Every structure is written in C-alpha cells, then in structure tokens.
Amino acid sequence: MRKKKVKKKHSKASIIFTCLLIFGDLFAITGFFLTYGPIDYFRNLLVNTAMKTMEHQYLAYVFYNEDMVKEIMSKNYFVEIDDEVNLDDIVIDTKEKDSYENEYEEEILTRDPGNDLYKVIDLKVGNSNAHLAAIYHPEKLKLIHIEKFDVGGWGERLIPMCERYGAVLCVNGGGFVDYGLGSDIPIGYVIDDHEIIFSPDEGRNEQKNNIIALTDEGKLKLMANTSGKEALAAGVKDGMVFGPFLIVNGKPMEIVGDPWGKSPRVAIAQRKDGVILFLLIDGANYINGGTLQDVIDTLLLYGAYNAANLDGGQSSSLVVNGVLRNTPPLESKRTNGRWVVTAWGLMP
Image 1 (cartoon, rainbow, N blue to C red):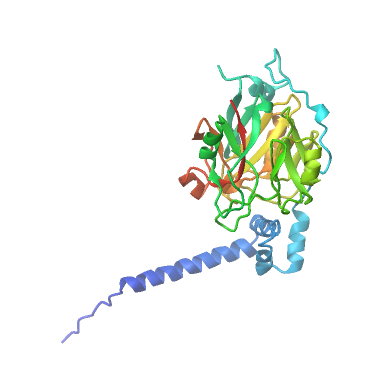
Image 2: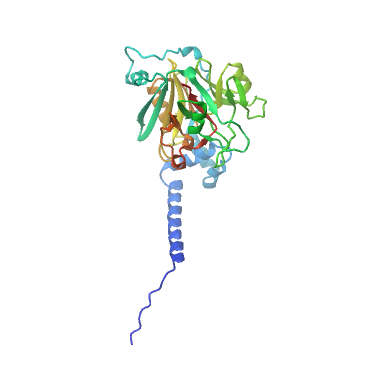
C-alpha cells in the first residue's frame, strides 16, 4: 500500500520570520557593498556626514579605522571664507533695465505682471527640481521666528509662522538642536530688530559664530567667527547662525571633492544690485538634490555676489502666499513642512 505524502504546512509566523531573515541578509550584503565596495561616494558621504556633526562622529569609526577616516577627509573638504563682506559694493538698484548682460540677469530682473515684490523661477539643477526666488525690495525682508525659545517645544511649521507675521514669501533659516525630533533651541544667535533675542551662551553674547544678517537697508552681511556683541556693534538689524558662507565679495568657496554629497539645499544670496536670492533644490537626503558646488554654480549664474548656506534637508521650505512651493523630502512632504525655529519673511 503506497503511503500518501503529507505536505508540510508552514505557519504565517515562520514565513514572516524567513522573509525577515532574507531581507536582513540582503540589507547586510547591500550595506557591506556600499560601505566597503568600489564606489567611493557612499564612503565619502558616511564619513563626511558623521564628522561634520558634534554628536555623531563616532559613527565614522564604527566602519573605518582612524587612518581611513583621515584619508577620506583629506580628499573631501571645503575651505571656509573668512573675508569681510564689503557692503559698499552693494548698490541697491533693483529696477528693470533696457538691456541685460545675459539671459540670467534678464530672467531675474524682468517682473511678473503686477508683482514688484518678488519673482519665483522654477529651474533644474542637475536632475533635481529647484526654485529661485528673487526679492526686489530687500529692505522688506526680515527675520521671523517661533514665539519662544528653549521652553521644551518643537518649533513651528513655516506656513503658520509665515501667516502669523503676514509675510507673502518665506524661506526657512538657521539650524536648531536636533536629536531626531527637532527642538525649539536655535544653533547660535537670533537677532531681531537690533536686539539679541536668543544667545547660545546664556546672554553673555561672546560666543563666536558665523552670522548671516541683514542691515536696515536690506544688505546681506556675512560675519565669520563673530560674537553677538560684535554683530550688534556692526549695525545688523536681523541675523541668525548657519553656513558655510558660499560666496563672499564675488569669490566662491573652494571645494575639494564632494564633502557633503547631494541633499535638499537652501541658500540665501545677494546680487550687487541688491536683489536678494533664495535658492531651494529639491531632493531626498543623501540620495539626490544638490551639492554645495551645485548651489554655488547656480547662484553665480544669476549674479550672486555674497551667499550663504541655510538649513536644508527636511527643513527645506519655500512658502509663497500661504502655499508650500517646493517639494520637501519624505516626512516633511507628508506634514506640509518640518518644524523650524527661524526663517526669512518678505513683508508686503
């Protein structure tokens, strides 16, 4: 008598467990290939991303020894600009012209019908979508911010912040203390209407930061390694901390290799005629978007004379008339922008 073969039934739990093991193996193999394989980009990105932070530098040494970290850093870096901005070079005259030096100047200075405040240009930077906002009245640009700092909150999304100030166009500004969820603690000084309203050193105003500021006239003043006291003495009206400075007095920052990789980027700049530029490059963190060199090259095309990097990544937000104009990455897209602490707002 022939015995019947009994098919062995597998429980759902065992199937799920097996699938997890397979995916785990694939993930480990992929991670090993990216970390130790022949493609330099991922090694450079991991090491440089970890080493530019204060809290997470140890991650670079989890995968690589000290010599390899030093070798990677030596091939991917930028030289920060510490020259003083010459504000006399900025002569504010933002009106349209009869003739233009090139197509980029014409694109910037030619107004949209009925709008003398600003213009937003959609463009491509590499394969990524980007947005360039031109501000024709730099004196109407001001720093905006959350209502209270360092009280255990989480910042504010840019759309309601922009509406609260009555601004017609807003771009996120400086960084904030962030262990994954964000916070209401700015990184560095916040200066509002000639007053320091947040200080990183408990009100002593002596800590040195890279301060991105505007004067009463609307001139962009970039101050390297400057204390709060020094910033006020220099006559700045509004300011916050971030960087690096990308262009100073027409001179671009020197970049070797690709120290920060591709990511969503935000930058503020000013032309010699006083037009303020905001550049936002869309993308997904560390996958696509723009490099620091992409930002510099694009801003130079449009005549930027001074420029600084603003907080990018998930924080990247451009709000125009109450609507998010750019496409922020991942979670920020779902929530209509990330919580931020400071921003730049154009008053009507």
